[in-house]
Image (cartoon, rainbow, N blue to C red; front, side, top):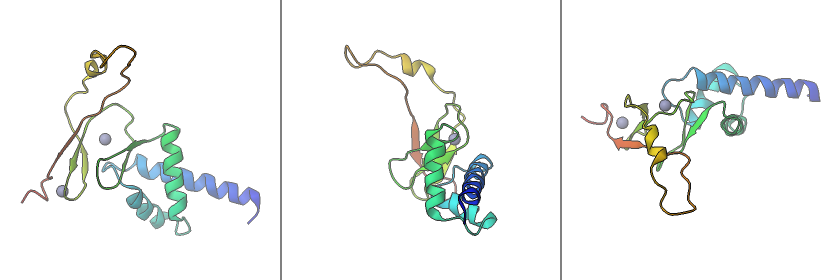
Length: 131
Ligand SMILES: [Zn+2]
Ligand SMILES: [Zn+2]
């Protein structure tokens, strides 16, 4: 494959990864994005999906949700919001509670420290796992 068609393919595959995250409301893991991408482009490799997810997160196009256990998840919603994580099946859903902006303005732990952001993750069991 020549350079031009390889570049074109890379662009298409990056767009595909972005489109999948943007149309997924369930905070997919990299593995889930790969499964969905493969349905639309059987030539896409796991490495390509993972690399593009990393790049798109770094570019701020999508958000990577780093989890205390299990796989990381990806979110198209760039607005600050909180999540619930099921400890059994790793399902991740948005919480409807309001973002507490004032928590970024609490006094820093000591002189010379600064606070830039905060995170809140509630962990428990989802309705499927809670039976
Ligand atoms: Zn669950
Ligand atoms: Zn979310």
